[in-house]
Image 1 (cartoon, rainbow, N blue to C red):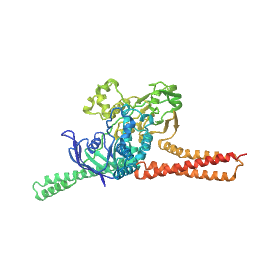
Image 2 (image 1 turned 90 degrees about the vertical axis):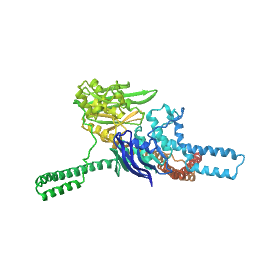
Image 3 (image 1 turned 60 degrees about the vertical axis):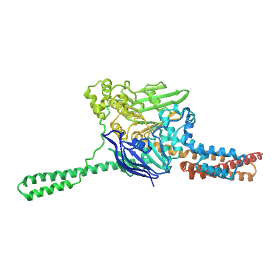
Image 4 (image 1 turned 120 degrees about the vertical axis):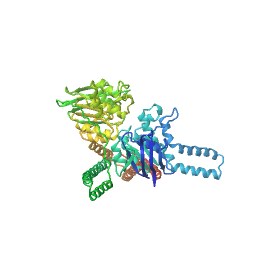
Length: 630
């Protein structure tokens, strides 16, 4: 069944250029499709057309009838005074309406209840249960925990949140709505690593259809099974994830270039022969007819367009030679903020050439750590840099002292260079032609990051510190930054939620968690593997400890029958705990499937009740056995 159908879609915002120029494709029910294209290619425009926010210039867009569509690219306006919890509860507006009607019927039925009223109540109760009305609190807690929305934040006013926090809450609301078709516009932009992984697992279990715009290549690799790329107003298709797309796109480019060169060589050869035949055939009809035959043959040759690749930035970091072993060291570094300890007693040492990723959940203090390291914020402890170290820093939030200046003037004032040098440097970062006369304040977030990088790369440095360097950049720009960093031979310290970027560059991981920094002298994949092994081993170690303590209890001279009964109950408790753990796992996996979730929740309730009865029995037997001791 087709959930989304787009045929010959055209959209222009002026008479000269079509941002979408005859786009056509279908998305089948249950597909997970990634929508790619450089900034300005029309991805968000396509989303706005799909949701009816804007109309196409021509063409057809249709969604499967009866399917509910959810979009997170725009944050809805909520009434003044709405808390985060109120916003989350709007996902259950339909269930709340059913519950209110049931309550009204209940108040009437206390006095009199006709057959029609009872039938309506029974139908509403069945629908309420089927649609998960009794699990809304559980579902809300599960989604909020997964996306990192803590309980105190749920009590805050929605309007008091930052833009990123609002986006995260809106994503939680959308997931709770149980839509059939998810349209996700950069869903991982404001998520930390744990929340992004949780979202990927959720989508992998989601039974509906997903169309997502994303620059998160790790996310695209794990989630999507097909790529639609918007290029020069048209759609190109790739049947695979992001890694497949990269390889296939390069293979197509090389094949098209080879075909083009082959055709051009043949046309050149025939053209040379044609001109000679025309000259010879002026007084010879046979040669003239042969010339015309060659002309027709040239006309019949299929003309392959010369393939083009997007322009890439062409620059590299200026570098300063590093002498010595130690780049910097920190001892007893700590920071308290509003009575809360972000981190304390941190001791680290960095050698030349290392590439370190500082990871951690949102709010743990990663950016603060970098600012303390560079002296932008106070903190306790001692920081020492090597004598030949010169650093450069790209903050997460880019600010310019004079946003009213043009790009060209900004370069002239801040870098003290000639107009030609400034234009050459800007051109290397794809600021060409009239772009250099734009004001800095009018640039997008990605363009401001590009401009700041342009200015940083001119400085001779041997320590580069980056805070979310790929934020706001499209995939092409991210790849360019990566190419530039690959040539940088100095020391690199960076904060990033871009797992593709982390996996590519990190040779050492610092994990900021629980008020301390844990040092992993390895790359990202091994780091993830270590954490997974620790997660699996933790409950096993706890169980072994508990069993050992049970075995080491001193034996008493109580009734052998009671001891036998007690051991039997302990075995039953172990079995029941295993059952409840398995049910918890199944409930998590089925969190987006109402039909599977309802019976699992019922089984879980029964299992918990049985476990409670067994624990009561174990306690009774233990007390009785203890009372029989001499």
